[in-house]
Length: 344
Image 1 (tube, rainbow, N blue to C red):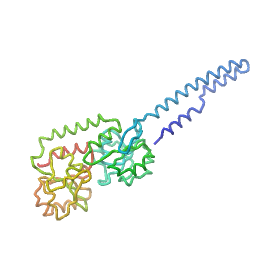
Image 2 (image 1 turned 135 degrees about the vertical axis):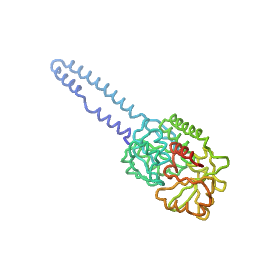
Image 3 (image 1 turned 30 degrees about the horizontal axis):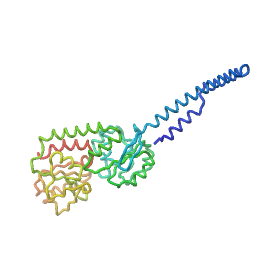
Image 4 (image 1 turned 45 degrees about the horizontal axis):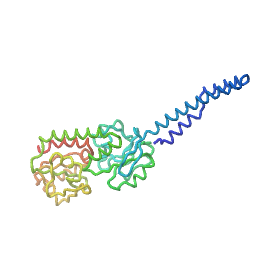
């Protein structure tokens, strides 16, 4: 980041060099110096006064431009940030990143989502250029790459005090703001990010569009008492997403879907629950959505051929986890539209 000190230094450097017309004034004073000393002094005085006025105005203008900052409140306090940041780095590749991009901001650097390995399609569709890769997880930020990207604003997330140490590491690089995040409270994440960029009105428009899509989908809402399981298939594990703690279910619940009674409702602290092979019946519901990670085709096939799973008799829909596992308003909108096909 180019600090205000650097800008001031550049301004000072420009003011040191005397413009050519000052030199001309000095030459004029020398010309008249022999025959009219007082006239020569007057010329010099006029030229110097004009120079001081011009240079002062230039310095004032430069200082004013370099001082275009505003103070924002965030999870770890308050920070003065550029009014119009041009080089934004995002230290969360899915949840916060999506909110940033949804507001029309183009990050110059970002981490790759550690669990899915790539940005969600709705994010990629809005990226004008590939952000500099600065790591794959909050704990593995490449500080050198982040510094080399020369951000003028860093946006990161935290849950409670989880990322205080990371904040202390990156804050000296550029002004840093921290979003307080939980997966099920994605709307709050969007509003916090919007406040950083002074775009609350745009965030409200995005949320209004989301609510409108939900309302339009009510005609295809699940029947009363129908249940839905959202399960994630990984190469080495199977788990279900909780109704009150996970991002996908925070969206599906807006459509009227409910998890089966035998499942843990979850919380901000409990987003998923592991399922052991012998207890697959915990997934039992009218509909089951399988979110599968890349490279888990064999695991999905084995699950769908498992007699305990087929015996559930549920309607099963497979979706890629990178598209719907985490996200913000763009993914929420896409999930609403996809969910309209469930139960068919």
